[in-house]
Image (cartoon, rainbow, N blue to C red; front, top):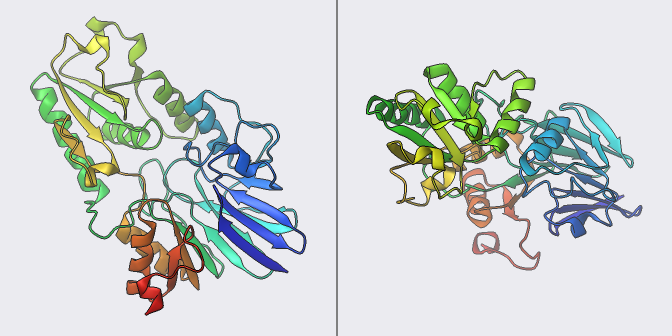
Length: 347
């Protein structure tokens, strides 16, 4: 038996001579339509577009399915739920989902083909945080590691997440002392729940967020995370106390909600992209991400210790070069044509 794999709007695995095709995290519905099975690592929509399509056979964690529905207001279809750390058989291929960190229900996928063991990370974080575990290292020997490289560039600086969260806490407290409402833009799913959990632990404040984030928070609550928050669309203007209120807005929101316009506010944003861009329209930008940074990605590759590494997303070429230089492993972007060598590979 021979196993082939490539990037084709998702990671496709072809098992010959059976001509079995599996795809992980397709970026279009069409990419998954003729595949025998589709595997989804987590609920973020750049990985999970196949969920709502009846004609596509999907495998994921149950929490990923629930979070997708809350995030998009669309129903998942034809989905079989996989427990983390449990090995299942998909068309005679053994597959295991293992923790990825990143967000609740996120998984790395280990494929046990007859001739190769391949681990695909999806998106990972290697820090244990309040709301997610650290990414697991596969127990078995891995031949091929396909790893994300969203922040896989050496000069992208991230301070420790604890220090960044402490900076957020200090900024929030300073503004509340001035009777200014801290208004923070951040992602609905992942960062919002981690920051809410942290502020719940550290400050006695009222946290307000939009309905979509609220629905996601409820799923985190069901999974044992005691998040405390309020929906700002149910808020009367007189209920907002300047000295104890924090408002979370969606990351891309530009306009201030009407209920805030009579209050003094201070605007901040939480995003890993603050390590790259200034975000000058905000008073403060915090480079906090639920993705692994470059050093963390490198440590994960080292711990997995595969024979070959293929990189995907973000700074895939940069990170492949770092893996070759630092770990002396074969590494290249999975999207790169096979007949096109980098200078480092040629030398």
